[in-house]
Image 1 (cartoon, rainbow, N blue to C red):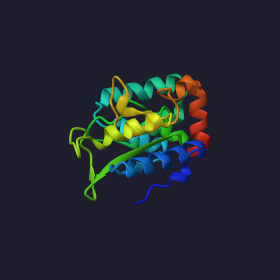
Image 2: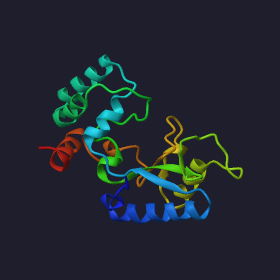
Image 3: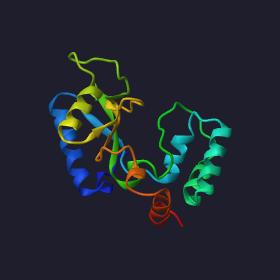
Length: 179
C-alpha cells in the first residue's frame, strides 16, 4: 500500500521527497510506511508493550486533565501486543499533525528493519538519518534516549506539548479526527 505524502504539511512533504531522492541516489532507498497517523492508530502503537495498569492510569490521567478525546483513543484502541515502538500517546506525536514520517530501508527489493546490517559499509537507517539532518529535519535515530530509526520529523521539539497545551491538542485532535 502506497503511503500518501500529500497528507503531510507542504513544507515537510517537499523535504521528505528530497530526503527519499537523496537516499535512493546514495544507494540506500527508503520507502514510507507511515505519514499521517490517526490518534486511534497512535493509541494502538502506544498500547503495545504496556500493561493494563499503565494503560488504565494513562486513561485516568488524561480524563483528569480534561483530555477525554485522547483518553478515548487509548481506550478504544483495545489491547495490543508487540514491541515497544513509541513513547507518544495519541496527539503527542507529530504524525497526527502531518509533520512526521516513518520509512523502511529497502535492500535487494525487500523491507529491511535492521539497524545493524551494513551494505557497502553503511546501514541504510544511518544514511537516512544523516540525510535527514542535512535537510534540517529531526531524525529519530539520532535521539539520545529512545532511538526511532524509521522516524523523521519536521520540528526539533519532541512533540506538540512544547507548542500547545494538552487541552488544545485534545481539541485539535477531536476537531480533526473525532466526532
